[in-house]
Image (cartoon, rainbow, N blue to C red; front, side):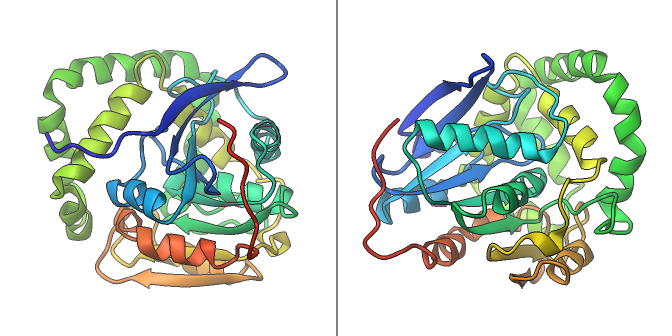
Length: 307
């Protein structure tokens, strides 16, 4: 199995109400902080091998924070995305992080945008990689995964406990056959994503992440479905933070038209269309992501080292 750079640090952060957030750090402790919000499902090791290496080379403190209900984060149902932003604010305050950038993959996209809005005095810029679009409210996108979340959210809300148990049993059954399971999943992917999965390092990253993250719980993806089916609590037009949107034109999970929809509503957004790529194409865009986000850093600002 292909070896990839491990996290520099892994641990948990305890919030004032006793809940914990699991997280992992890559790159130097005194680097410029970029918070990474994983996809659905995913956890703190869902960081592309190239991004891990770049974090070291470019002196970036890349921090992957697990959402409630996966890995080492206490399961918790947020009332709105504002609650996630409040948890991230508490986390950054404790870690001595003043200004930072955010990046959200797929299901992590709404959480990144929530920070870009609620913490806009601290978030320098945001990158969204095939991020989920709003499903309800004035910014609702038509079709695709948005339609699915609108339909599933009410059901999942009442069945989270048994569904979590079912998902855990499924993961435990598939664990000894993880390679074959990944191959089966890849067969349903568009050609662009199949190319991504041909990279042994990427496959190892996904396998390592999902097995660790699902060790005790899988409720985060159920919490995601519920909150994606609600109003986000803010309008896209209110997000003044610079936002970079990277979407593959062959994405069959979050279609390109959802990226175009959000680009037309976010006042300070730039849409990058990745030709021939599917939902996972953004994992190959580490250089571009770092270039974009680091370009917003005030010169001469140093970040404190505090694990």
